Amino acid sequence: MESKKNALLFVIILAILSAIAVLIYLFGGNIFGKAVKGGSKNSPVITETIATTTIATSTTKEIGTTTAEEMATTTVPENKKSFWSFLNIFRLNLNIISPTNQIQLPPPTPPPVKKPPQTTNEISSELNNISKNVQTIQEQIDMLERAKVLSPLNGKLILDRVYSYSLDPNAEYIIMRSASTLGGTEKITITGLTLYSPVTGQKVLIPKGVYLFYNNQQNIEQLITVGAGEQITISTGHSPINYSFRINKCSPYLAQFKTFNPSLSTYICPALRNEKLPLAPNALNDACLDYINYFPSCRVHVDSGNNLTDPFYKQSPECQKFIINNTGYNNCSLNHKNDADFYKKEWRVYLGQSAKLWKTSRETIQLLDTDGKLISQIKLN
Image (cartoon, rainbow, N blue to C red):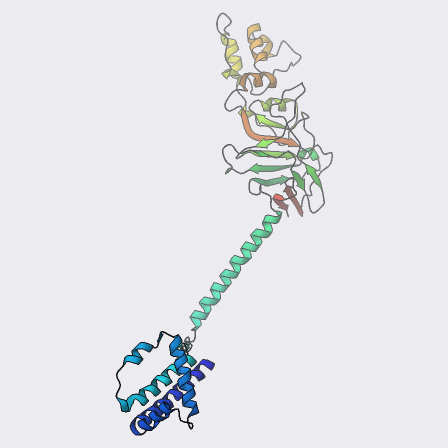
């Protein structure tokens, strides 16, 4: 605003001085010339201005577009010298007063563009977009909140089913599964994970187990690890064989004299008729071959106490020996432990509790990692 005022004042002064210069040129050039030449006592202001201008021209090579030398050599009619001297004095003084010689005015501010009023559809669309943005932000917040409590194993281990209807802890169990989407070599250690009920406060750790169990001997326990698509049956009670173990194709032999919950299926057992038969001269006779064709899978011969009626004792000694050496859990394991399909994708894990852990209804069971973060949970209504 101040620069605009200065510019306006400058223009007015310039107009006035230009008018005076024209008047002097037309009517009083000689008189004014005499005043400049003689240094009249009645014109001290003009004399002083000339002196000031002389000092300025002596120290400046070029002012405006005319140099001091050019002004000195320019031929001007005598009766016009006073006018040009005045103009030079006027121009020089203006240059001294305003060295910039130009005043930059700011560009005018364009008027604000008025937007047309929004239609109902536009307002509705904008509200929908805002609602979607809010929903997206809320989902991100929820994801961050879940990340605080969810384990990195979330989605990799799933509590699938709970069987808690029986009062017998040996008949109470949970089915847990590992995700089928795990990498081909990825293994998850489940030993040390916690099963927890936020309803009752019950809490228990998953123990170690035996990868290959041997009957009637000491077994070495190790951390239980599972790969993709495996099932883990977690029983509340005690193990019938005193260990948690991985099921293999010979495991159903163990169920002949033990009770497992759930039961061990015998269909996975190798059939006796498929075992490697002895060659001649120890080849089995036809009666033996007929007998072993119908011998039950995953069973050992049990003495009935009546040798006269027991068909086992009607077989040749070579046949009896073949049956004894190729049946039973330990014999089966020794014969087949190197088979590609020997190990099955199931573990039997026993928590070793003497009482039930889980309620039959209005129950929540959570699987927690070693940091206490949630892996999976299941609710009973």
